[in-house]
Image (cartoon, rainbow, N blue to C red; front, side):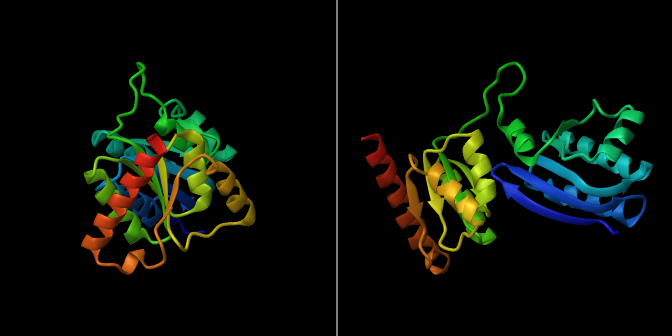
Length: 231
């Protein structure tokens, strides 16, 4: 099976789900090029290897190179859901200690949110806000808008990923898009998790509003909600 890569952002972390074979040739080059493309504006990457059926020496070398490339730009790369046959390859190649591996996506994402070695706390630029919307362009807009306004911004396109973030870090506010969907169990868990968290709904017309007007109105609404919370 040829390699396919499915990528999604979970807060500060980018998960790359690998499905197929990581072998010499186009597959290895595809993975290397994809991670290089991500590193233009991302620094925390997880390779989900659960669906990798086979990896050869060249493919393993590609993963080593992606780790090196990520650390060269002061980022990091972790592995998760490593199948037993890949785990054995890492051990036989004496590379198992080179990678930070985790048994699930949630644990890998959580590792990026933990304090760094030496007890240094993660840098926070302000109150943490979680934005959930199915529109990637809307999320990109919200990230830049809120970061420039001094907030610590985390984004997600899926309720299941939002739940991961809500379990591993605390937020002052949640911004919720109009078209976010999820399985019934995820929706129930999400509503339970939001019980004590202020939720501000963006509205179905947010993505089509004048950008300047939308930003001014949204920032004012956020200020009002947070001021009311702290009153």
